[in-house]
Amino acid sequence: MLIALLSTMLLQAAPVAHPATPQQFRDRRSSYVQGTLNVAAGERATLRQNADGTYDLVRVDRIEVQDVLPPTDGSSAAINEASAGTLRFSLHGRRDVGSLLKVENSQPAGLAYSAFIVRQVGGQSRGPDATSVCTVPPGMANFEHWPEPVTQVVIGGLRQSDDALPTCPAHVETMPEEAVDVFATEGEHLGRLSTLFALCEPYYAVDITFGHRLAADFERRSQEAGWTAERRSSAYARGRDLERADVGVIMDLTGVTPQQARRQLRNMYPRLKARCQYLAQQVPGAVSDVEAGNRLLDADARRYR
Image (cartoon, rainbow, N blue to C red):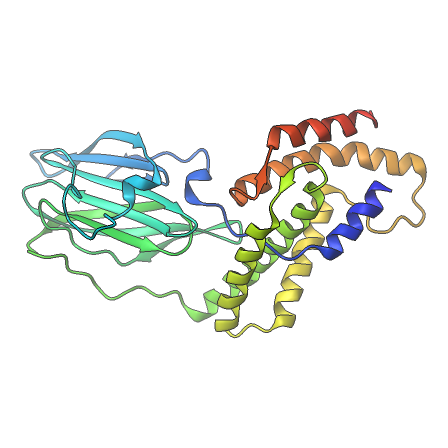
């Protein structure tokens, strides 16, 4: 009966969700290797230049999203807080503002550099891809922005700039054919997460309004890219099928013996618990009382040991 109930809920669930906000990706750390700086989301990397023109990574700090947001009043006071003679690169993001890279230049000369970004699209990493960035005059700070979750910025080609004001090259656009693949992957990911909303709801406190807002955003963007409703539905359906298979949900009970159903449930509960925790990470705020939900799932799982 539990499997049948879950199956009914899956058919009623709306497509939802979006890639995780950058700071939630674990096991990524900022580093500086052979002249290339890798800035991880949720961290600030500080470089100091040596007499021979090379740089050393002298500090890495964990930061909050407030540390990369421009002043709300439009002022320039205290924007650049890097120590004298250093450069600071800070990467963070939030769903409502996108991803931000704050670059602070407290060197005596202006800074020019090259940058590549690693993005999360449809739950998968894309890149590193070239991105356009502005020069940073001495004593100033710049903010680079991307609408999608950026988990890493790769920075190289650090060099001196004589610009008295920030100079920004033409924006680097994603190729149209790549955008088609991006939407297909994201649509499947939304289908997966809509399935998880339905499966996790009996155990966890789930706020579906988060998912509805994100699904509406995907619908708007995919429509602008020329997608039809039928194409979105097809992508969602592929994602739902993949997620049900991963969790181990049986949609057709024909020919399944009680012993087989019991064994399937015994295997399903641990996978469902892990996937519900994944949902809580993927859609911040949409799932609450995670520990309480885990206890409920564990209690049901014990019945089939």
